[in-house]
Length: 207
Image (cartoon, rainbow, N blue to C red; front, side, top):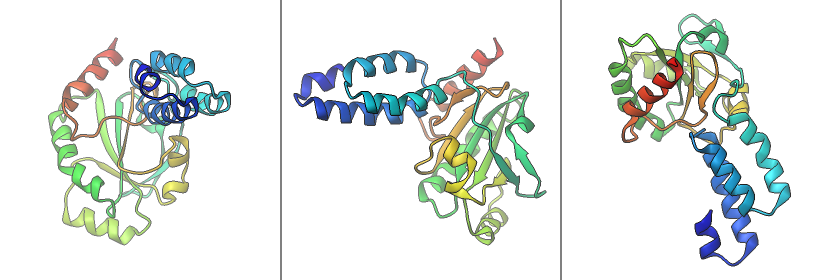
């Protein structure tokens, strides 16, 4: 925020850039979110934009109850909600077969899942945003994925997409064992130090 004020003289530009940055940053639910929000409110003087982002900030602040949603089990066709996953931390990979970046993350996600395969504190799942279920079936038949698979047939019109403010995928959501938000837009499996990141969050959740 200080950099914006040093490099730009137009307050309108500062407002726009600060709001754009914070809007994306909020979804990651970082540990310094409250400090960042405070700095943003001192930098941006557009009260309308601040009010617009306030609701997003309140929803994605770490420790908040996560927005609930329904998803369909790929194999059993049953409807699941977040309550069905309570008791373990949950990492959700939201993806689709047509999404190149999503497919590129798959090998990294597999490595993360393999690393934590004997850790009963966390479960890894994936929720497909494919509208064409036959395409999804083809992918899952040809490539075995070592995690439970679900299907969100309404894709970006779904509770999931709207509740978490999706504007694209891949998207990784991290929730603690009590259903509290850790990150609404968690680092991707290909991110540096992803194992350490997950382990640090699990350790905090255990306290």
